[in-house]
Picture 1 (cartoon, rainbow, N blue to C red):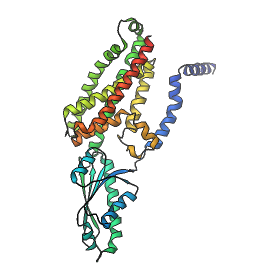
Picture 2: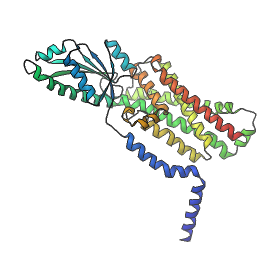
Picture 3: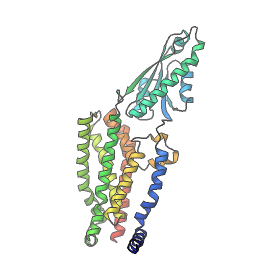
Picture 4: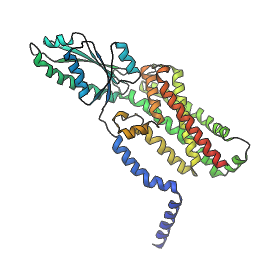
Length: 369
């Protein structure tokens, strides 16, 4: 019994001395609870809707109002040409488009079936399926409301849905890009997170401090080998995804290479920053998993729509590089999006990589000094 108590006291003193591990043991479970409680929300709200009302009658405006007043859709823009709706869907400024043809009110009043087209971006299959259900329910409801005004009881509105980018609503095409981002992030962060810590544990960090080499050169030299390995690994993952899961490639390969390179640079920089702040490989590995695994799964839009999260949590997603990479990756492989359309995402990835590399360099320079 005395031995057990002695070991218990020793472990308590050791945990108290290791403040990083203590922080992980005490605060991370509570953080997980809050994050899962707020982010695990499968309700799709605030779907950005583009409206092309070619009829311009009270009946057509009633349909638009039914969508906006439902709480599921937000009016993103009123467009006047099919090309405008296509552009908004390509730029992710709208997730769906409602097209009301000319003569809609005439068909409703005469009791004939009035066609309405709903165009939904299928790059996110789960969201597209849910939005399609919302649209069908709203149109059935508003069709019943418009029926008494007709000369004879109309059969209601007919919906002509069209799913772009993923016509079969295959969930694989939604999940595989997210898995590419998740695997690349985990492996890149973990690889560099252990590099500088290994120097510390082996005692060679003292030699590094005395070597006539600047901190930026040391950081770059540490990063390049891991960047090449991570890039080759990511290329293998993309190739396997296309071979095994039928992931299409509708965009430009060089654009994909640029987006992937910027994303990996930020991930490797994150690992280096973790490595400079850690004293043991165990702590570095734990931090690498925590910082890369959880945000990539929960806060990137990989599984759960960012628009459905609380506003405070949406602000946190601005600092998650996978959020921008997923938009770029899905746009390139599923939509064939041009480079000019994903420049904001590439700019955010570049800014993140530069900022984290700068922080890692400053941290290492302080240690070497």
